[in-house]
Image 1 (cartoon, rainbow, N blue to C red):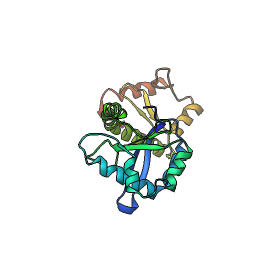
Image 2 (cartoon, helix red, strand yellow; image 1 turned 180 degrees about the horizontal axis):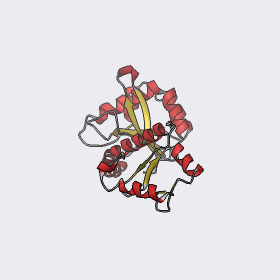
Image 3 (cartoon, rainbow, N blue to C red; image 1 turned 90 degrees about the vertical axis):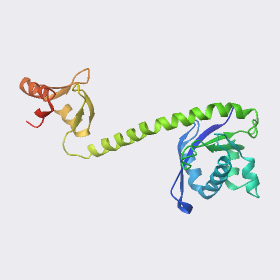
Image 4 (cartoon, one colour; image 1 turned 120 degrees about the horizontal axis):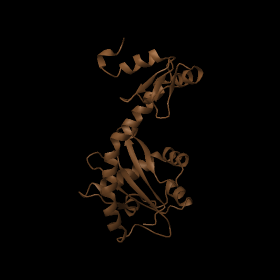
Length: 222
């Protein structure tokens, strides 16, 4: 569509305490500027989100609502956040809900420049084809995102331990280790990780006992 970019917004909370975030956005956008824009103009952004939501829920399918609905809902066509957007070359917007069962997530928004103008009838078939695939990809990606978040939380928690800890897969490869484990591995010659990622002990007796732990779960702890 020759758009300036796109953003996926999410809402958290209820009523006037709602917070708006942008977990996904085009790579040309700045995270810092985007967060500043959202925090500075939060009330106006929530007004826009509510307007787009109301029009998006009027239909069963996934389709984008043009920003003409914003101008109808507001007496001023030049609100402060819109003036800021124009200074960055964003003159028009369109948005809609990708997940109408959960209205707070997957709020897709596309930004258009002055050269493109408002979203046109010719643009709609393109977006009508693409958006269901975007919605499906996001739905499939949420479990992986949650798993990644839990993984990062586990790593952060392990790094606070004063003992060395590592987690191995069934082939004795190091899947996860904390900073203290890595420090000990570099400081001492008691164990190492080979080129295939397997944990190995320098002492042969220790190595045999280590391997035996993987023969039967009942062996663990001896």
